[in-house]
Amino acid sequence: MPMTRLLLLSNSTNFGQGYLDHAMAEIRAFLGPVGRIVFVPFALRDQEAYAAKCRARFESEGIAVEGLTADAAGRALLEGAEAVFVGGGNTFRLLDRLQRSELLDVLRRRALDGMPYLGASAGTNIAAPTIRTTNDMPILQPPSFEALGLVPFQINPHYLDADPSSRHMGETREDRLREYLEENERLVVGLREGAWLRREDGSLRLGGARDARVFRRNAEPEEVAPGAALDGLLAAG
Image (cartoon, rainbow, N blue to C red; front, top):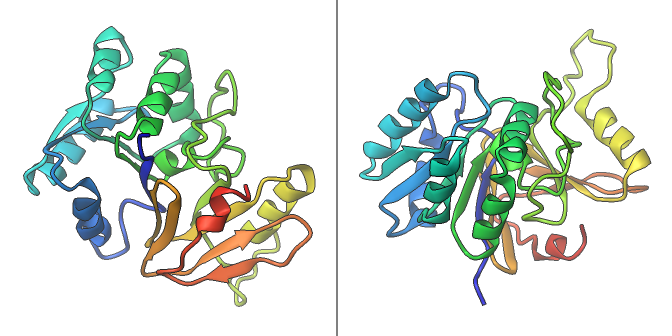
């Protein structure tokens, strides 16, 4: 049976570092012998510039990049991809482009068949069953909030702790996720900046330099340290 392989980054750029610098060692280990990846740039408006940025970064590591297009040529490219990287930006725009171009099902099938899937931010959001726990503004309306479902739980990238010194009186990120759980059963993993999830079929681990927070309905959030095994979440979504 094919093995599902995922590397899901909370963010693509850490403060004070370059694009993907904080995670490149993990990315290289994850990709292994892969020499060419397909980059999905749909989360940003200027897709050519976004693909060029990704290409420059990976080519410095000896990995070639081909940008995905929302057409028949893009479908053929995705069908033959060694690995895929879905970049960050606006999650609603990303999901809309994938659904309307009929590439979402292709991407899901290829990932479940064992193609390595690397995601960052919006690309991590769509690895969940839905995009209901994204932080993004809904700048457009995709046909559905249903996403790839490569993991059985929701993810909230860029999870931000409340600042006790702030005078902001609005809802915190924790408040928003608790609201989600008032209406939905599926647990949520809050990934802080600099953290990532790595799945190797039935194994799931938290990596990076930051803790994560797991939110469950009718329970207090659970802090999870880097290196922790989270295999149970693959069955408890």
